Length: 137
Image (cartoon, rainbow, N blue to C red; front, top):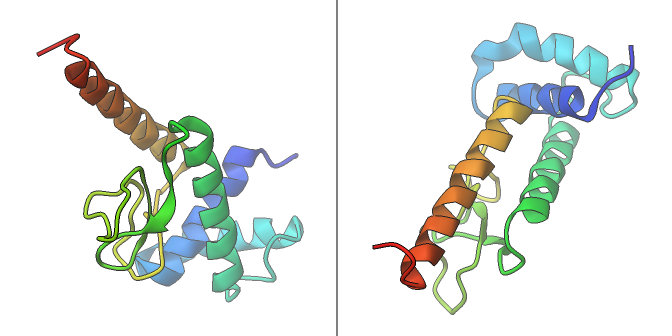
């Protein structure tokens, strides 16, 4: 069986979530870690930092490929990584993909969840642009 990008993402998410957000997914994380180890991506279940770094890289890559170019990676007001088009000296309080931990981005349980979240935000961005242009009220 060849691992797809989506299955690798799902496994990275599961291992990262286990270490940084929800220890109740340990059984799933152990299975995911074994698959990732076979692929040479992490060294095992205890390789939390590598799993998270790879997970974050994939989220940021997906986000920057799909959001308008004016959005970039930055830190929000509370210190979490986020993607925003906010400019200025004061950190944004409404960045996209912002996690609830300093220096981290949002956790998605699956690639499908990442896709749905991104599409919802794209729809909102378009709606706000339509309002600004007077296309809709």
